[in-house]
Image 1: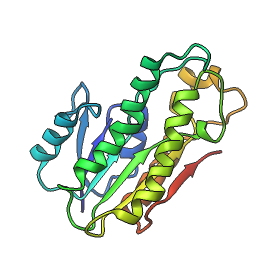
Image 2: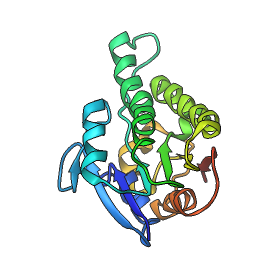
Image 3: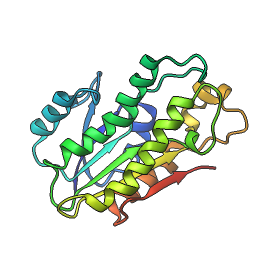
Length: 201
């Protein structure tokens, strides 16, 4: 049994990830709600505080990254920076800071999203930062210390979230959260490293 910090545990993607972590001790974290620890991934001090409070852990699974949605023509610098600081730098900082705390041989699993492969209107910032995270994971895997691993789950829209996102994603086929949970399970329990685990219909 591993001790896994799950960030974004109360969201649809977090609930999907939990279905693949049933063999482990899961410590939940998020910006609000009934979680074990509060954390804001856009705040370095908040990330550091989370890892210090938890103490020993074997894996970090992140399922959050806020994105602004707007056309490229109308997207402001502020909206770009909001997305970059959450979806991209927030996740990079989880790894950058977490590498000092995670157990030897531990793993990080980040989240990107299918829109960098299948773009849709209004999602340029989401697609760009998802692509950046996919690239980050493939490259930083060569520099991870103490035999730690890193992967990223790149899922399409969840069946459980189709009611919210389906209208803006015509032609997409949603996948059940249980299937996405298997991708997180592969990352945490397997030996893969530097992989982009695509979950698409």
